[in-house]
Length: 315
Image (cartoon, rainbow, N blue to C red; front, top):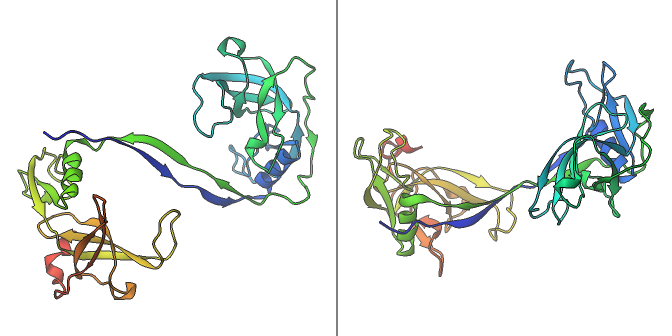
């Protein structure tokens, strides 16, 4: 049995979104050290504000200003901050109901330890020195023993100079991936420039990459079968948007390729042919990355195109 592999992986997808008038006013207000909420049909002040009433679904726009002080409604201690979290030292995640608000805001509390945090404790906002119109303009909350803010929020127009109209929201997941026995064997075979799958003992289909079990029959697979190296393009797409950190000029073609002997198409980039000449049925072969253990791309073999009936079940 081969050694089971593992490796750290990162899935990252930062995306840009536009802001409606309520969210724009809220984030611009943070930049100006002003916390805005919105009043619902029943008079509840929501902080952070939303654009539609969660009960009636009516559009909301009655903005009000609440105090920068509030009360912790619940909390959880974080002893080991991770990358890009608001504080680099241990802190508490807290829900804070600001004075004048009817709902709680999620943020962090700078405290020396969990014994210093309790439900019902009074806190206030610590503003970031540099503010750009984001929730991080609140650096954190800190314990506060002073007078509470006004319980009745003040009306606010929501108008500011140079309002924030869009934000980039980062989304990232760091994890350790363990491919398991079947895929570990698949990856090790790639080191020898071979592609192996596993055959189902019931339906006899060969799956590449192998999964350790047949997705159709649900039974375990163990019999290794070498496939390819040549294959057939079953379907494809033309990529026109350049990916970050990927040194490939657009447009290029990404395709499903059914390797000879396989009953499942895998993904691969097509090169060595103009993008507008790639077609279903095109016969291709792998080009291995120099010094790496993976296929860099597939190129045409020069063979006649495969007949549609030979790959129609894999489209």
